[in-house]
Image (cartoon, rainbow, N blue to C red):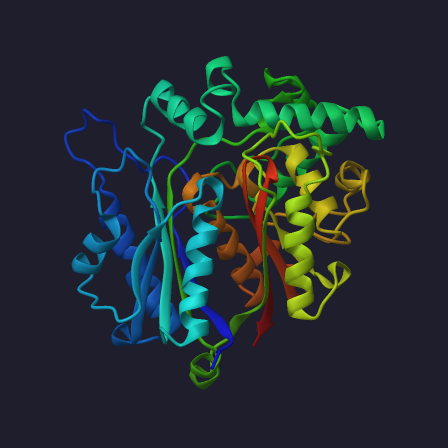
Length: 397
């Protein structure tokens, strides 16, 4: 027997600098931050601690002090589990995989209640160490790494190709950054909340041509805990919840940028994954009231929104420019402020995405609330969207 899965609560820290420097007299420890969120999320969900059967963590960064983090946390929280205690790893998809595994545990009956959670500290880690780790995990060590090819470099290539194919421009794409910062200005947990203008975006120094400082994600720390349970338990609680209606995954068998010729800006993986999620949910792309996307750069939001059918191919930049993807527009995208402004603690970013989707669906998004939000889509990815995980969630109030 399979069960439908409800999200009952999602708690998150503000994104920013939480990690303490190596030479600090007192250190902020990941497990202490995580434990407080678990207590908060369980309280908000109305679930009982004794019903938690699974703890599925997004694996911590390699510089995390406490190793075997999941089993340590089971002990620290004094939570015996009959389902799963584990850590998931999948680079940018890490938090999404944690969510997927927790969903499967509840769906299969292995767990009445499951937590998908994680903490990501990286802000005080030296940039050289962080970049060395990033390049070796997200590129081919025989080719990409030795030439210093970074993830932002792939996305810059995407931007150049898109501009060439569709007559777009850096200025058109930069509207995504302005829109995202506006959304973040309404989000109390966002890392950067000061509104910016298009001219300010264009005036920033280039990181990788044609992407400038405000068009790429910052480094930051954060932690999230989501409480999932069987829908019958959610219904009995009398509380509003978000139902996971559809899920889709696809890996195109390539590692980041492949040597096999393809359409590098088609983002086939999210086309396929979102198609599966829509089909399982019994909906179409046009039924979405909003979407929260894993999009590290302006161009990635444009390409992912087009691949998911939220924007017409070649029109994603124009939609950002016209306001169609802004709050109040046809299809609000990344209402949290997205990775560029809400922040990007990479391994838990998909759980921050879930946090925003949940807030929207239960009507708790405050000034950035999408009116009458009923259906929302969310995504996570592996570099350059060579793999994608998409969920469609529905409001039940």
